Amino acid sequence: MLTAPANTKDGRAVLTGAGLAEQCAIYQQQGTGWAGEGIQGLGVVGFENANNVDSRIASFVLAYADDSDAETVWVKMTDATRTQLPQAKQQNSAVGDQNSSFVTDAGTVVVLRTGSVVAPAMSHSDMGYQGAADPYGDTTNPDETDPIQMWSTVQARKINAVLGGA
Image (cartoon, rainbow, N blue to C red):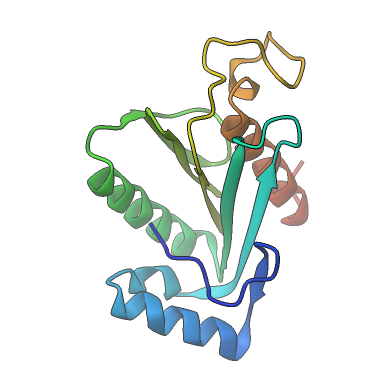
């Protein structure tokens, strides 16, 4: 998994130009330099459910020059996540163009690709929502029962809209 850029303000960062080049150099030193190949911009954002302080998710949004660069990074990021979380249960869903979820007792990591954008999202602690009532009020859609799945679904929709999709 990628490390967060230093000097983020309130858990948010947007990197382009020199700042992006500096972060890609850090990734190169950490053995995750593939994340910087063809990258155009990097964003970091967080989600916190105000009703449950334990429901926190950090998400990267990595924008690439084209779909091919993004697909290459998605494959490498998925492989790296699988290696780092060998006990995780891997699942796929219809979110984005490509998606893998790695479910552990402590939360979930989702790696999704929509067009030329890759967006890994990580929960920070046990969500506690599997099998429980949906805090968002929709018990008919299992993808939106777990906040990280809901977050990934929303992200994929927003990315698709920005890229000119439906």
